[in-house]
Length: 285
Ligand SMILES: Cc1cc2nc3c(=O)[nH]c(=O)nc-3n(C[C@H](O)[C@H](O)[C@H](O)COP(=O)(O)O)c2cc1C
Image 1 (tube, helix red, strand yellow):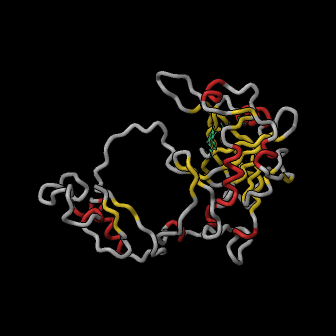
Image 2: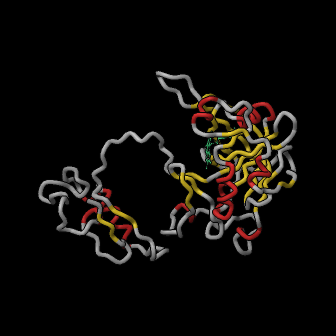
Image 3: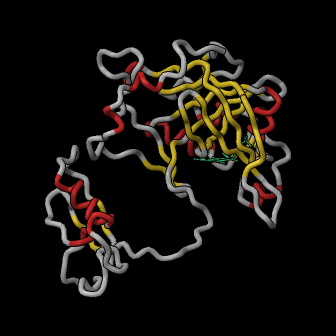
């Protein structure tokens, strides 16, 4: 049984569930997580209750609470949520290819990208060693969706044919997007995206080792050499800081589109000045 509890207003029982419901762990025999009892300080639930006493930023956040009795499962994919990126690369004939992707994360100004090895973008990136990571906001979701199940590859690889993909040469046209020149790399930026990161390829390696199958993906490490953002997402009074309350990235979770909710809690990590993370005074090509 799942109990949905508004943590901001409802008094919490152990595990955030309302006590007395059917199927709840027996407090005599079990700890609050459905496991054997342990010292209160080691319990994740005691931490939850502690946090619950601090003031939440958003009073409207409602967290569905289960009974902390997770079960082993085998989902086909483990796409628990990541920002969508429209990656632009140059084709062999110097035209632009654009592909939606979401296996991307950043550390400083470096970024790891996970791309299918047979994809057109992977070939372009290996050959040209440059790309632009265009980050759409939730406002560009329809453009992103128009690019879904298209590929710059011709012929379309058999596994993509089976999933209903088609070849598309003019990705910009079908997505109804526009381009603007980049400053330091050859692929253009996508004008509608509020964040555009020009990047160069540093390294790549096969990704997804398994005992029973060859790898089908490549992990690319790229380094951002120029960042462009729309002034509307900058923190008031700061020319080099993005305001996360203004930036509404488009997210993908289990192949579906989402936005971010409101900020939920004062972050201890965010107390460190952002400038402490700056790798060098000025980014260079
Ligand atoms: C929202 C979204 C996210 C995607 N994420 C990835 C990804 O992280 N890696 C990947 O290889 N393909 C991803 N895809 C699938 C690619 O877009 C697809 O393979 C496409 O054919 C690539 O285009 P290309 O062959 O022209 O490079 C995603 C598609 C969508 C719509």
